[in-house]
Image (cartoon, rainbow, N blue to C red; front, side, top):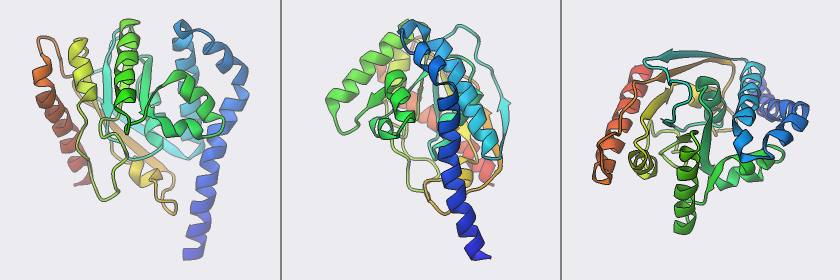
Length: 245
């Protein structure tokens, strides 16, 4: 029985990367066209949402999302969530309809095929470089001015699996304050269980998500960054604890 579990887990991991590649190959011409101009990003985003939905369905994952407040069309937001799995990217795309740009780690650009589009559409950060972090801030500012939203996983790196929620970095909150952009906390309950970074684990099932009420940043100053950080983290942590109760 244990042997069959290991065989299944191995197949499930390989199947994930097959699911990642298939829609990219099928939609490749459309994807290429959609990244030719920065102003065409919303079209790329629609294709990315189809890609994400295809993967989740192909992996046998059913999404169940509760919205305490829904983002309004044509408005910019700072979407943040807990980071536990590769599925976080797909589930964020499925959950949010407003076109947003990911701020993510540069290492993902090395993934074949996926990395080609990732490095051309996302804002990449090398967290070991202060120069890179500053460049991220400037690029994110430009995207917000274009009317897009930003998505950041404020824990930075994926925490060790025994950690429910790591401490948040300040970057997302400082950026939101500077642009009076509302914070949208999102809690992913099951991504770690369904597809963690432990190779022999995971499987099909339900992915529960909760989109919390937005946190306004109007009238806040950079001195409020840490308070905003802690308030946002507390909302997600409380929901994670409720999901795991």
